Image (cartoon, rainbow, N blue to C red):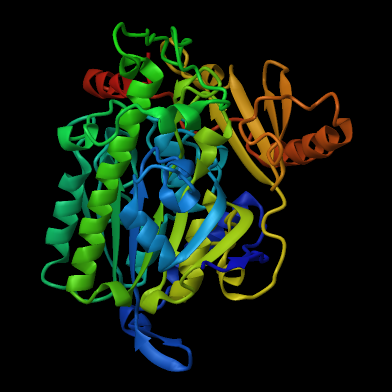
Length: 489
């Protein structure tokens, strides 16, 4: 039985002004210890070799479509086994349901408005040191194998990586990235190394292998699961953010778009799970798993008909911002631990750095989760988590004034969520009694709404008023690829 833990997240980075941040970052970066000084660390009173870091990001993966998060279908036996050997966070919240901005927040521990990339297709200007840059500076060999165009090296995520293998296509099956990563690992590399594997399979367009398509078919269990979830199960779908339209298909119930797309999505999740198994098995066979910290998570979720919406990016409902987060420590330390309190995507980077015994840059937004993982009977976690999203308008060029035309913000606690839009709409949801977010409680719970509104205003005040990066400068080919993935009109 997995033991439940309720613990406090600790170690927040400082809060220096931005000008001081730049100077401090340069000072820190210039005085980092040499490789020879960081080849080992003290763990439990013993000097051990520097640990490796393996980071697996399964793009567009909803937490609630994994068995370890309670899903009724067998989509994720390998990830479930990984969770049994590690620490699972039940309420991990992304900062934005867009691929590139969320990844940059993962690698900088900064909100999108701070690192300046608020949409796919922008190019990161390097204003904050990334996780890969930090590890490279500390002597780590760094490599990335990615399978989706939004995280191509073109957009600046390759900073700090000595090897960065992307894709010339809009989307490549995850086993391509997985096999390339395994090949890179052979023969066992000299520690320490940082390996990032990006799997794009659950992202549209869904194209799972036929053998997995046949595994996930309509049935009474699926219909029962979908009932009462606020999904558009039949008839035409509403407009999605790129103004395309998905219409119902004639024929058997299996042809209804909701079930058809849900089955394809689950098949893609199962395929990504097979790639995870392939990578983890390789690490075991080469005796590198127990010398590595392995972290698995997603950048954002996916709408599958809930709230009359398909895909992601336009809304801040749970299905789009709740992500899986699993830490697997060497020797399966802390195995079976479940942390119930909410945490943020921003907390991943400082947790990694603290466990690896490395200093991070000044003034990150994240909090290390090591106290939440290692200490017993602690309550707390993040009182508030914040997320935002921006619509992709059809106007060209996509200039900053257009980016900020339609924006949504959310503030979330363990039990409540408030969503506001720049158009003046506000909704409040009780996540305990109404986990599907079907009933607005803002009128009945005015005190709760007022408290969350105040927290959201404080957060917005702390954010830059507009991103400092320029308009998107996309080639016709890049625009075509992003449009096919639902991001650009």
